[in-house]
Amino acid sequence: MAKAAVALALLLAAGAAQATSPSVPLELPRRIVLQDSPEPARVASAIRAALTLRKWTIESDSGSEVTAKLDVRGHLLRVRLAYDENEIRFAYVDSVEMGYAVNDGVALIHPTGNKWLYRLANEVREQVQRVVYEGESADVVPAAGDEPD
Image 1 (spheres, rainbow, N blue to C red):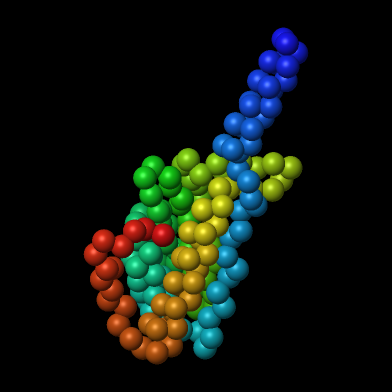
Image 2: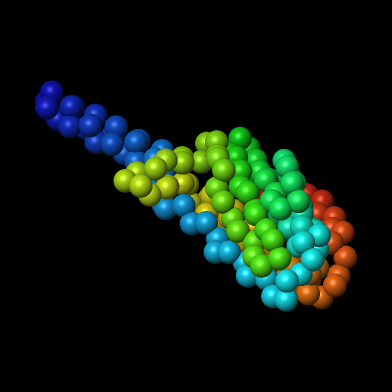
C-alpha cells in the first residue's frame, strides 16, 4: 500500500510539473522584408500602429527599434522590433508568467506567447502594407472593449 501511495504521489508530481513547464519552442516571427527602401519614419508609424491595435504598450522607441510589452492578467511578453529601410526583425526580450526556459539550447515558452507573436507579426505586415505602401494615415483608435490578443 505504501508503495502504491508513493507511486501515485510521484505520478501526480510529474503531472503537476508537466502542466506548469513550458511546452513549445519559442517561434519568433520571420523578418519582414521591405520593398523599395521606404522612409524609416513611415515604417516606425506602421509598427506603432500595429502595436497599438494589438494593445501592446510601447516602452521605448529609439528611431531604429521599438520595445513593447503585452500584459494580460499578469502574463507579460516583451519584444523588440528593430527596423531599417530593408527589414523589420523581431526579438524576444523577456517575459513573466509565460513559462520561458531554455532547455538544451532551445528557448521554450507557453503556446500563448507564440500566438501573441504571430498576431503581432501579422498586424505589423498589414500596417506596413497600409501605411508604407498604400500611403494611409497611421492614426489608429483601438476598438473599445476588445480583449488584448
